Image 1 (tube, rainbow, N blue to C red):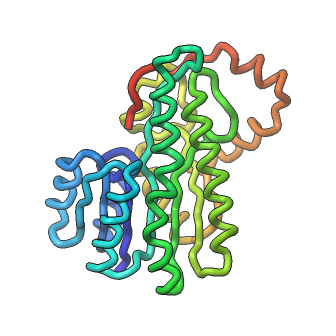
Image 2 (cartoon, rainbow, N blue to C red):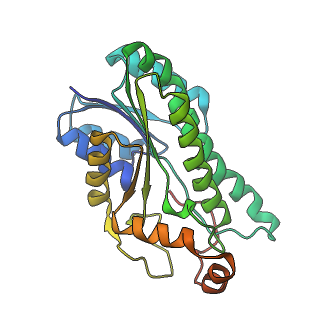
Length: 255
């Protein structure tokens, strides 16, 4: 029986991953801020899901949840750090600084807080998979989305560092970079979203990547080509092309 712990599991990719693994008989630990959505998932698969309503920036609460999960089931086979938030931000606006801080804390620190309490048990068990859901937004900076892009670039680099740290431990670290996925986080995007896929399709692709155990995966695969092209663009050309693209609305971070 596969044992899986997922953060940000109440909706979007995290919710779709929870449904995917539950439907395939896994035993799950799910955490998110919205308790009612977690308990709704648990009611659909009685006896398979333990719910941990918490915020991933609360490292103490995450450690308590991890200890409870391990005490019940032992070390997980897969830990998926999926929780993330997004909002448009402008550095010149002082009121956006707290939004920037929140995005960085959830999207980057939240990965470490989710993984940290499980690594010791996974080492002792001889292996497992730590999966970080980053984003192609971490490849290059987009105007009006500095905090989100920076947080995902930090996540990609953090996951690479962790992968090398744990190379000889038996624990695989997998970075997954989704492109555009139809979730509440993308619902208000005022611009075209090429290769847009559903959360369910993204979850299936993520689950396949996790099962294969590679180190890095872009979902959906056509966006991997887009990301490589973006990396190759010289700065002057990139700046000219993207300076006036539509921007994500400013406001409170969206889950």
